[in-house]
Length: 107
Image 1: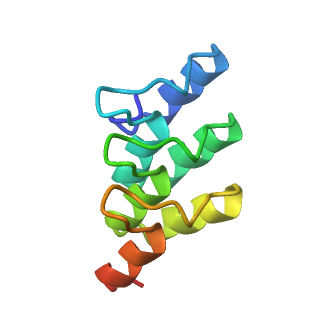
Image 2 (image 1 turned 90 degrees about the vertical axis):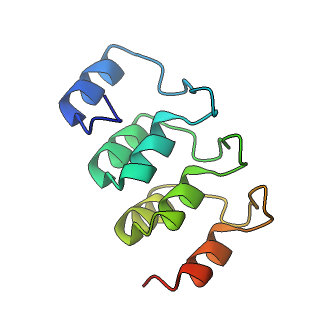
Image 3 (image 1 turned 135 degrees about the vertical axis):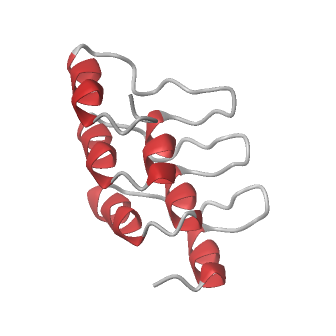
């Protein structure tokens, strides 16, 4: 549902207590997928249901890394404002989300 951007289905699954902590083979959570899509609405919904912002995928990237790499500035702001996102965590290349933002020259 997250990968399709279907907020209503995501909400229904969360209401049914479906696990928002599930991970795919790359260890990505629904919040990683929302971050990649730039879907601020679904990301906020997942955060409201206590999605873990510190989970890292196989490349050691958090949802904040993913949103930053994709250039989704509004979602980056939402993640930082809505939770205690650990901005200092490096990915497998040793880059923090701030390093990634600086390299991309995105606003």
